[in-house]
Image 1 (tube, rainbow, N blue to C red):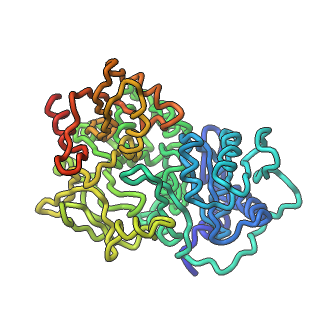
Image 2: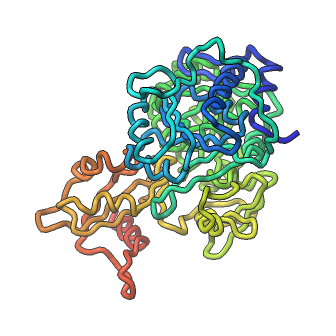
Length: 495
């Protein structure tokens, strides 16, 4: 027996069939619901020719409907590969071509876009998760048909080291990279610590994010419930936590800042025993406010990545004595500071590599060590603090943005003569995308004008939130390359 994700759903349906596994709003799915529907979906996917190792894209907003699809693909040994729901067709095309998928599954919200994407990217087939008038000929995987069995699909030979998911991220150039995670890796990442009572976890992340499925798998490994929301608004997250009597709420610092800006004193949030954060820089002031507003809960800060999983954790008892730190590596994780101060990690929960990109894989994984691109320092007790980035990638609100991609979108604005994009530290977002421009002769554009110019070209999280106008961009004498670090220093110095 191996550590197969499909077995998690089988066992839970057998052991606790009536327990709620997932909810969203007023709807619930039990473990039996997920397993039964997953089996039906798996048989329909087999009819579409989907087999072990095939990559299947999913494109849509967060919904309960995608959960049995996730389970079905795991049972078949096919690879679940979600697309960012906020991307336009132009942006999604590059990712879809990279994946070379056998099938694109679209939620009704994305069905029309999916038809266009499939044509552009040369995808062989489209399926939907519900009826739609815009995807003619597409199979509705959730349609009720009596001839589709709810028995386990006839699959054998699956191995725990088979790829389970591909999550797409961007490199410093903005080009997509597909992070391949095996069944074994996802099982190990989400099993740790789940030996107590079942968790009821509110998930703020959309389900194209690794973090969304990691939280879900962690809740399911505990025999508990994952609570999905349509948006990461303070009201919706707090409503979900109160209504479902959640035990854990994990939010990135930007979202916690929104929550802490509201008055929730009249709510009954006494069920929360964990209020956690991480993903981007966490100001000590935010941690102190969490402790004050949730006095009965413990708080942890997490540091990690899609590629490496958990890299470090700062425990509740260390929060106040180690301000700014992300803590110690968890059991099973080795951490060292490499050349240039780069944080390097090694564990059994590393990615298998970047899909179809051996060069990028070789750069990231060297002798078993994952090179994070983060610059860190260790104190005399071995606690890690992140002080910068080796590369110029921007991390804003849990999203990754490549400066070059944003620059390409801004460069042809008539008010822009030259442009460079950098990340500027921000207490709410971790970093904000900042456009630094040399204005054309007609005068500089406003930030709003640049944002409008990006519509249809860039997802909203990639658009600049800050604008700086300069006389000239600092460049190296030898190659003429923009000195981004110097730009950041000047911006910070000017206030």
